[in-house]
Image 1 (cartoon, rainbow, N blue to C red):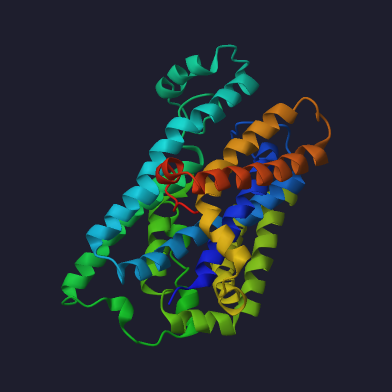
Image 2: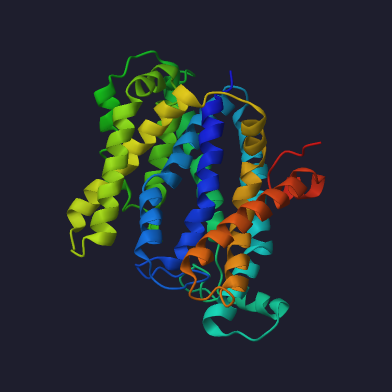
Length: 361
């Protein structure tokens, strides 16, 4: 039976990425971005609050989805699907979309005056911090597909080894009861793992751990039912810690690194658990709206940053100094353009294939 709340949490998280990436143009910690206006603590607070749990949630539910996928597919079929769903869109997006973003960034920051086609040589030969903000090579948002592909391969190997050691049985199917306190304690290794194999603040170890937790722990119905029962206070703790994380990092004006780190990882873990329980309780359903966004969310993920940067670039001069408009107009336009483009993608056999989505209609 399909777990609709997993699909619904996924597309909801992806939709949040549009205002999240628009807000990056105002980050207060000088992180390079394709377009940068000025530091703004309000918009930066939005980024910090959601960054604690947004991508970790996506990796955890990817592990849950893998558990259900491998119950219907052989490992070979699963690998074939990963290539189609992740590797092909990774190459296509990096080759077709990222040169546009880095070209606009080079024009905006470095006053690049060459043609877009000429800039392709810059994109493929300039390797610096991999953000793309200086016009150099970058995976952009497609780092997620790269990480997920690598993690899927590594995790599949772990799963097959454990199956072999368990005489062909999947240990995730064992009915051993997990008390709630044990589930809560599974977040303890996150601060340690976050420093291992970390590239640009994105840890392969942390995300692999979350992926495997999704596979072995949170794919179990009784675990999610426990979270559902306690989701109100668990999510409340996550939101409170997220708010404290924002205050300590953005508003306090003090260097409270240890407390900040504690709040960040408490926010990450408790918010993820709370959202799983809340999603199970309230969004384990399918209707026309949820089915629509579920079928187009992956295309929206690949497309949205292109429209974010395009709208910010072309509105940067007409709306200069109009901070509120310069935030909300690109957000609205990016939603409209991403949805329209996603509709074209899902109705084209070729575009659907290269972007890893199923063709509709």
